[in-house]
Image (cartoon, rainbow, N blue to C red):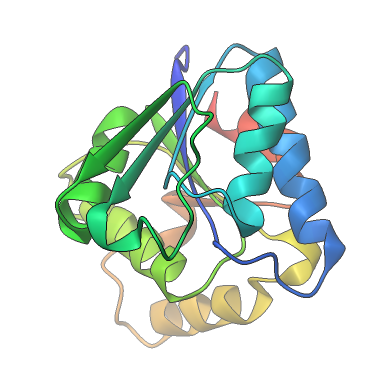
Length: 179
């Protein structure tokens, strides 16, 4: 499958490890080099801003989707190829899912986890069949991975989550897992 666009879910903060931003920048550059459009949350701060700026600096196409309520909170990115302002978070998530041919999850907070689990749930329910890669930068998601293994081992998942969520350790591996 040829990917035209990848939706990236990530934090609007930079986190405590410089590798979070470094991986975001590397991913943004790789997407641009491979002529894959970056679709993301539309912010200009943190990991969000890092990936968008790297993709743009490398000549890539970047579409942001941001709800009105977050315009001030996330300091929308005014230099994008396209910025879509939507009514609320639910519309934002739905548009982000629809605009991307696949998804990559980078480190982030509650919103990133919400997006990850909604997309994973939709995949399990066969609402979509888009591939999802989890970029486990600096072991950020190790505890979540262990918890998901426990949910599976204790009989709370309908299928092997590892068939639906591809765990990767580098930006290049995340892209390669999706193609």
